Amino acid sequence: MMKSNEKWGYINDANEVIIPFEYQVLNSFIDGRALAKKDDYWGMIDMNNQVFLPFEYDNLIGESNGFINANKRGFWGILNAKFETVVPFEYDRIDALDDYFRAEKNQKVGLFTKTGTMILPAFYDALTIDDYGLKVQKDGKYGLLNHNGEVIIPMIYDELMYFNNGFSRVKKEMLTV
Image (tube, rainbow, N blue to C red):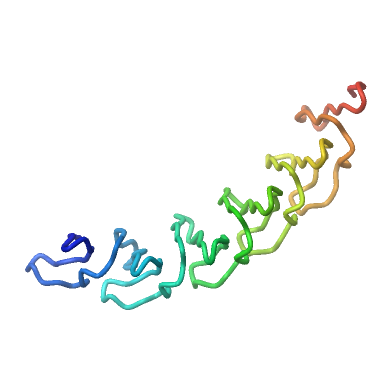
């Protein structure tokens, strides 16, 4: 990879240009593809400079697990390895977690599976994921949901402490149980 006239491209060992010097940013190739920025938009090319993903994104962040965190018109979404939209482009922020995508919209958080199934809409003020489930908080009240989003402990408690031997400590109006 080399830079010429403020643009990036690739040359081979014989000093032949294999990727023209037309990119503002050109990431390293992984599995024969690279994220690139051209004319202020991001896309993806292969080693033959063929476009895999059109240059229409404000930002692209490659994920090592085969997903791309993409920003289009100011909103984030997730693309899978086939460049299909898994999480729609309507979120202010998306974080890739081990088994989920945590999506934030209007300062509320929701949760998606890696296949794009919505588990929780962007409704909660806070969300923590652990082995016991999904600890959620809304308007100062806490509850616990299973990993499918079904209620285990209703969201009526002022505090929800972590589990020990299958039990949880909760606090409601100064009473801790």
